[in-house]
Image 1 (tube, rainbow, N blue to C red):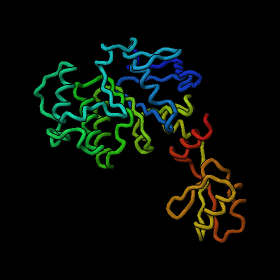
Image 2 (image 1 turned 180 degrees about the vertical axis):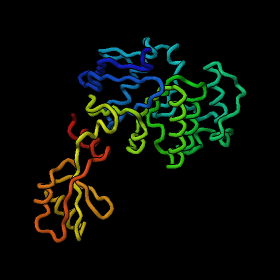
Image 3 (image 1 turned 90 degrees about the vertical axis):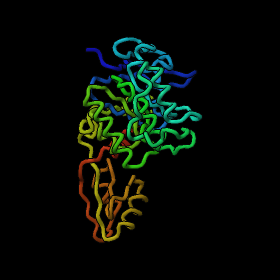
Image 4 (image 1 turned 135 degrees about the vertical axis):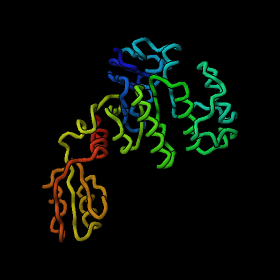
Length: 286
């Protein structure tokens, strides 16, 4: 069976600027693939190539084993960063428009999570509410593939949890999902991750694969503020974690040297978190 979506050695250039370089990506039925990267990493450009909204400079893309087309796009649900909603239409009118586009029944009741917004103009609603409508719109025709570009940005934690329940339900029902997110706790909900930096893939696999043997050094001291200052003065990338400190990707001996004779300082090494490994990869650029 062909992947639902696939990019093979895809490159996209704009004049002398390379936005995406030699990227490979696939989405299979029933899996959630997280596409991670800082702003400008090339995530949205890659998604637009998968959708056929922009042509690849080289390499190939396919939806359901075929070049992107109106027919293949009819089998997917897409939530862009701009949401794709009409501000001067109500929620009900936006949903009715989508039903017409996909030849679905017009009088299907609105999903419970957006029914209370039925008569509200999209332009008058909060960003979180707009995102819930866009998500419901993308799912309304029961697509085989979901492509979601930052679908939970601006949504409160409870709303994000509910959206992720819906994403998991769609995958459990056999749909493939490609989702971009800046939230590392959401990345942990994905079965497989692809991390991009400066247009290239710097890591791919499960969260455990990506973390691998990466370590972080944990510092505990009588004065966390003093420990923080000494690490920072030594040029170490240090972060506060409770009343302790974490210094990812740095040997404990180097941290001890930075701390010097600080009273009560205790140093130990622990596995890195996904977030720490992500920033290490992005900073290194591969």
